[in-house]
Amino acid sequence: MENNKFLDLSLVPKELKLILLIMNTENNENLRLNKNNLFTDIDWEYFLNLVIHHRVYPLIYTKLKTIQGKVIPPYVMNTLSYEYKSNTIKMLQFSGEMVQISELFIENKIRLLFLKGPVIAADIYGDISLRTSKDLDILIPSTDIQKAEEILCNLGYVREEEPDYNDWKWRNHHLTYNHPQKNTQIEIHWRLHPRPKKVPSFNKLWERKRESNLTRNPVYYLGKEDLFLYLIAHGSKHGWFRLRWLADIDLLVRKFISLEKSNLQIKKYQQQHLGGQAKLFVGQALILASQLFNTPINKEMQAYTEKKHSKRVAQMSIFYIKEMAQINIPISEEELAKNHKNYFLTIKSNLRKSFLITGYRFASKSNLEKLLFITRLFYPRTADKMALKLPRPLHFLYFPLRPFFWIWRKTRNI
Image (cartoon, rainbow, N blue to C red; front, side):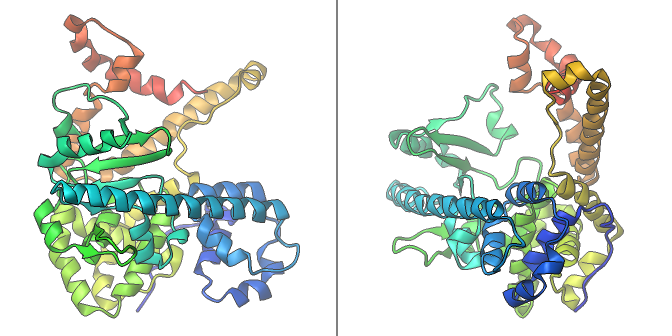
């Protein structure tokens, strides 16, 4: 097994490198022995921002809490402890909600697969407190959307927004519901990813499903190869801007290393999940995991990492990871009044980031997706209608105005 060293990490900040080092250290004793060398000259505020943004604070906290001494400021450990405990409470709350939703859907003859939440945390990490989740994602057949919505509404959930166009089911792949009292969010998916992304049929996924042993009542989720490929598709779509996603891939790959059958199944199912882009995205994920997490790559998986295009999009993802994918950088009115030059520099920086992000998205698409991507850039969004309300006879103007709305949104917070 070899780890690929294809990526240029020279611009990665030392705080992010420290996070990776902590996560890659299997024996906590090594952290204790080298604590004086590891934790010097660290910007701890920035360290905390990175840890929280990348959603790895449960893993970082469980590693750092064993270290004695004053090398880590108390407020850093207090913040990590608070976030860890808050996440544990939230995941326990999600566990109860998950069981209730599963029971009601099954009673109403709705097949459902959980894509996020406690079952995924338990499957990958063996502990629901070690993975974060802001909501519960559920996949159901598209024919059951209305019935599922009625169940959620009866439980007190409210749909986040009303679809604005008649083609919402084609343009979207999920609906979001919030519970005002419980402060929980549920996404109902009828596709794993938006069109025109290749996705397996629900029936295929249902045939390969697993039942969680986390609860007494039946709770179903994706088969291990389907979960692996789904997480790769999701991470690549977002440029892997959260390290937590790569931590998932790292652990899943380590589980697959000794399982020849799983390697074969991944090759079998990858076209269903990723279509013609399968080798590109699997290669990208393995390159990133290998270099950032020292993920061992076996001989069969090695072939994925040797594609030039995979190396290129993996390198592009480093921008997402180190920049925390923040496109808009707010500047207060006081700062703006003091220095107008900062205003224009920030606009320039935001637009540059936006073009880099758009470039990544474009580079990671198939030819058909590139064509649709360009078309969608000029297709009106609900946000455009909210920004400028035009009478219905003039709705056609939203199409030529779309580029101006895009630029305005990238610069309005500065």
